[in-house]
Length: 357
Image (cartoon, rainbow, N blue to C red; front, top):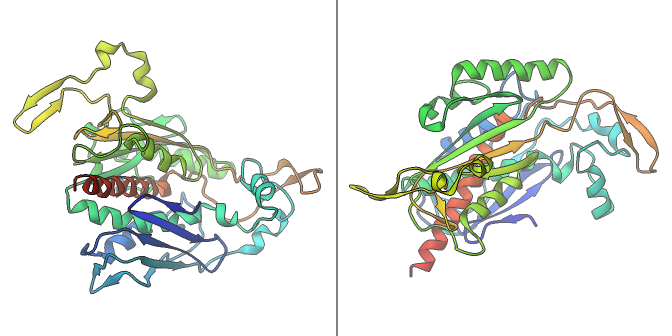
């Protein structure tokens, strides 16, 4: 399945070391102003080579729109786009042609399809997420018109975590440092931890938190396609993601029901809740409060050190990969998390409008 979404849909194509990555966005309403500078900035936040703690592959990741946009606005027709690959070092992967890298998709892909593109993982590479960022940027432009804001940030790297809630943070400072953590002091410690992993030819994982504000009441379905279920589906489809929790998440299981319930109150802005353990979603439907969730990312599986493995002939062997790889995926994954969240909210917004007719 290469298509995501119900009404607002993205179909992506391309491989890490192919000619390019692209997609077709269908279901986007007509009349949305396409801010190309904004879309390119979103891509720049994801692209490789942007700092000392990311892979040094150099790609401009410039998007080229081929249809669906005229005079700066969407036409309500399919939006086709492509980002051309420029800096592949495919020969770095020649030694991996017949071996299975630990914790990668090599073995499962080979067993499922009978062949695989060993150059950087081919279709299973995280480079495919470029298409998601473009679609997510357009979804953000759609949502901006109804006052929805989406902000993700690095919450934890290894054992180094923020000790504040998102309400205590200035999320506008997220992009003021290379690790994308809105607390400057914690950010420096996170950067040092990532650099340590890089020096050790190792990797480190962590958690990204995402906050969605301004979501209208009523998005989501009560049985299948619950809003939090679709958000979970979107996040768990991102490369290297190992977990998703929203609202109080697993910590909420330590509370009693009387402590955990979000009490309704009447305010000058309508009905609100005194607390928000529900994470802005109740019964699978948005309640108007902030939606917030955590996404857990594993340490990147590609290590630039020798490891034991098995080859296609089922013989025990070792590998010592070469290439340019991230010691930590988190800084570049922040815009991907935002993009997937934007597509889910945009999709449910359009579905809700359809149901109200």
